[in-house]
Length: 287
Image 1 (tube, rainbow, N blue to C red):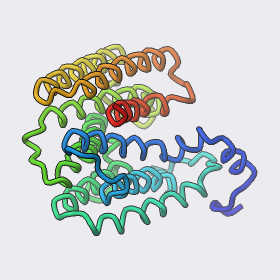
Image 2 (image 1 turned 90 degrees about the horizontal axis):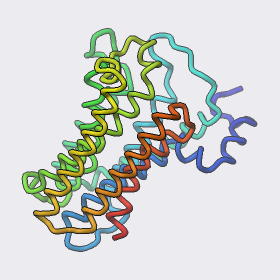
Image 3 (image 1 turned 90 degrees about the vertical axis):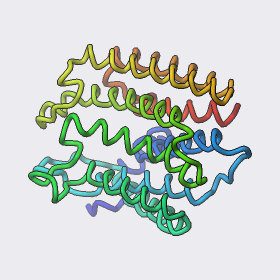
């Protein structure tokens, strides 16, 4: 059967809305958009349009980058498992491009340049890159992958809104730092989840090098830093709602960390872990 023709398994998967949204990265795109809007709420004195060029670019870019690797052959001769949602990955990839390209045209030069650099790193993270040894992906370099992914998410959701609104980045150091440590904690959880797969591919990730127990400790330290930086941010901007959102999100992330530690193979891992980003954003936006 042609890979882009819906079969019975595809239709069955489409009937599960929650699984559909998470597995196609629609949920991840909303997480990225939510964090972007959360940053804008700190920068702007009034609410900004929901369908701005930056919002459409971030949402479209997330769909494009996360769905593209699912459409290409696996590297190193790995066999791809059957993917009943593959036709939908194809559709969402082009839907992402349809949002990204026209939106990017309306962005200012600084956002365009920074976004292009982020796109290059994001594609090199997921796709074999010619300049890299043995045409490897950035995610195949264990210690590099987590810092690349965390940095891309931090810049996309914290720095790009500042550039878009022509706000000096130096005036908001806590927003950038707390976003980094928060996303870093979540990325560690994903690395812990993937430790067996990465081990089979000889990818020495951070949890593999420092041990799972110490990796969980690093998650806790990162969340503690997130709370501390949010407190320092409060003393500068006196935004009580934002501080409550940070403490609530940190507590919820601790619960998710404990649950996924006891149930590492849970189907809802992505929804729960990525969902912490959306929770933080909603708590800020809806205050």
